[in-house]
Image 1 (cartoon, one colour):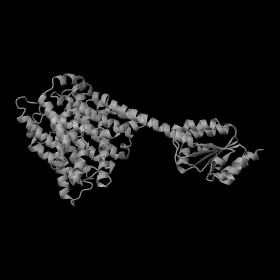
Image 2: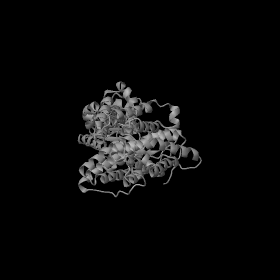
Image 3: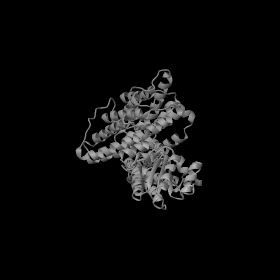
Image 4: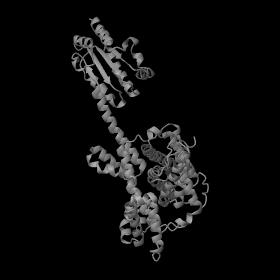
Length: 549
C-alpha cells in the first residue's frame, strides 16, 4: 500500500519539486488556518498530515495534498458551529468531524466508489466551485479592511458598509499591495520565488518598518514543536450534525482530490488510481483530525508547481510535508508578525482563481436550464450551504437528464403492423407476413436500454394502438432493463393475455431474461413463446393467428 509510483530515478526532481511545493504551501496553509478559525498552526499541521500520508497511501504519485479553499470554507463552518454550541469541547468535536470525514473517504475507496465521485454534472461543479470562490472573497473583506473576519457571507456583507467607512488604511494598503504582487509578479520571478511567498515576505517587512506607528492586526503567537494528540470527542446530542458535516467534508475532499488527480494525469501522461487516492486522502485527514490539523485534499496549484519543478513520484509529496514540519519545529516565531490583511489578499486571489471564469464567460451561450442550474447552485452554496447546493443541483440535473433519456427511449419504440416498409431491418419474408396479416400481428420493437423513466410512455404507446391478435416484443437490441421496466412488460403481457392475444418475445438478452426470471415474469408465458429469430417468431405468430379461423 505504501508509496505508489515511488522510485529514485528522479531524486533531484522530486526533492526540488517537494521543496518548491512547500514554499507555495506555507503562506496558503497559514492563511487557511487563520480563515478557518482554528488558528494558523492548524493550517500547517493539516498540510503536514494530509500532505505526508496522502503521498504515502494515495494513488496519484505526483499529487501534493493539503488544506484547500473549498475544504477550509466547510471547516470554518464546522469549527464555528460546534464551538458556538460547546465553547469548551467544540474545537475537539470539530477535529473529530475531520477524523470521521477521513474515515468516510477510506470507506469510499474501499467500496470502489472513486469512479463515481466525479460523475457530477458540470454546471453543478462549476456552480459550487464558483460559490466557494465567492465565499472566500466575501469572508476576507473584513480582514482586508483591518477588522476581524466574520463567520458568514451574510454577516460579512452586512458589516461591509461600516468597515468601508472605518477601514484601517495600513491594512488596506498591505492587502491591495499583496494582490498587486500576486497578479503582476512576472513568471520569471515566480519560478525563483512563488508570488504568494514573495508577497508574504515583502508585505510583512513593510508592515514592520513602515506601519510601526499604526500597527496592523497580525497573526500573533504561533506554537512551535510537534502537535498534541486530540482524542476523538463525540457528544450524542451532536452526533447527527457531526455525521452530516463529516460526510460533507468527505464528499467535497474526494471530488476536490480526484479533479486534481485528473489535472496531474493530463500533465504527466499517467493514470491515477481513484480508489487508492481516496484511501490515501482519508488516512491523511484522519491523522489531521487526531493532531488538530485542517482537513485537506489534492491541491491543484501545489500539484502543478510540483510537477513543473520536476516532481513525479510520491517522494515529492512526502518531501513537501517534511519541509513544512521543519518550519514548524523551528521557524514558527517568524510568522507571528504576518498581517491578517496580507493573508486576506492571498486568499482573495485563491478565491478569484477558484471561480470558474471560463464557464461564466460562455454562460450566455449555454442552454437556459444550464444557466439557471449553475447560478442556483452558486447561490445556494454562498447563502445556504454546500450540501444543499450539491444535492439540489444533482437532483435537478438528473431529473432533466432522465426526462430527456426517457423521451429518447420512447421515441425509439416502433410499433409495426401491416405497413412495415418503414423498418429497413425487417427481412423480405417478415414484411410479407406482416402485410398479409393485415394488422392482426403487431411488432413492438425497442432499441437500446430501457429505464423506469420511460415506463409510462411504453405502456401508453401500446394502449392507444388499435385491435390485433398477436403481440411480438422485439428486444433483440435491448442490453438491459430495470425492475420497473420489467413490471411494465408484465402488465402489457397480462393485458394481452386477458384479451386472448398471443404474446411472443424475440432476441431476449441474458441480462434481460435474468430480470424476468427473478421477478417471475417469464412464468407468464411458455418457453415456446421466446425466440431468437424474429422471422421465425413472425411465422409462428402468423400461423397461430390464422389457424384459429
